[in-house]
Length: 66
Image (cartoon, rainbow, N blue to C red):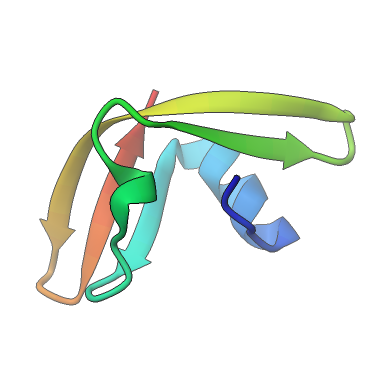
């Protein structure tokens, strides 16, 4: 499971995207990999799947989830 802070979790659940630093992209963000995001307010875990990775403005990677 990837550790994220609360504001980042909320943004991921709303946009279904993760911005990752240019040199921080690892195997845990591979295509078809599942990412679990825990929502404390609803006390539930959302499992999202990586389906696309793009380079955003040459400064970071955008990992698209569904």
